[in-house]
Length: 197
Image (cartoon, rainbow, N blue to C red; front, side, top):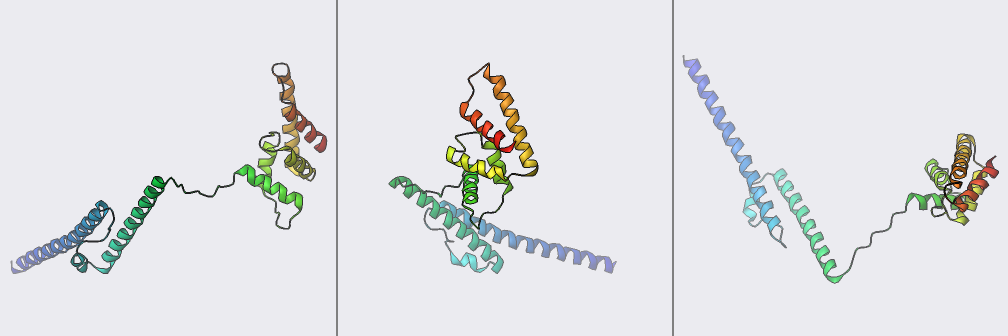
């Protein structure tokens, strides 16, 4: 009986200790949440109001709190900067990203100048081959470069380009009776076929 009583007393002590230890981190977490909520509602100052509240935090909890505060400060700075820019009418200009078409045309220009930095890029070649008949995407001067590039085309890319050009010619012939064909596109198709056939 005495053994059972001792065991039950030990269990109760463990429960009490577990409850006490679980309450402490919760209260610290509550303090962190309260500080972050308070700082989120303030417009300019994003710091804990009472430094005594942070004294009883562990170093890890203090780092977490500092990171949260730093993040909130940065958000507030960005918001103020945006408000200032909207009031003064200034806008942030982001550098324009080059499109696939621009990159492909640059690739073609580098190839034509035989720069040592030119390197074969399958994706650029594919874009050029798919869009070479569109005068808006590939201007006339670039199309002339593209024709000289196509002279060196080999393998399946050459065969596929010939097949697609022939298909486009058939389409244009069938559409000729229904609609007025695009003469510039037809001229480009003919040039490609003459060059590769």
